[in-house]
Length: 139
Image 1: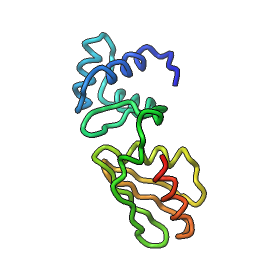
Image 2 (image 1 turned 180 degrees about the vertical axis):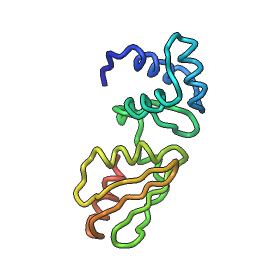
Image 3 (image 1 turned 180 degrees about the horizontal axis):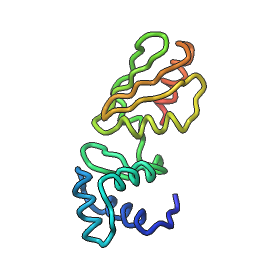
């Protein structure tokens, strides 16, 4: 992702050079660096730039599948009825994995909901579960 927004460039650089476990710390550092930001604006920037909390620290994950195998975050995949898969991940792994599922546009997925370490994948029917599981094992 090429960013022309100076705040986004500074945020990506900050995240790549530091170990931040709280958004408040990121906000404070960005303010010290001369940017007029709030927790809300940083949260929006995180979503836009693909920054997620992984293993307790914020990391840029969008466009980095060459360095991060998302399947390594997955601990288990369970069927919860004919229209639901539940994916358990390492702490902080649910968001980047769910984002990869969403961007893959796999047939039969109605939607995803991600927490910190759990993803609910709503499906049209149980026939699509195996292809989704296969995809999850290969991301």
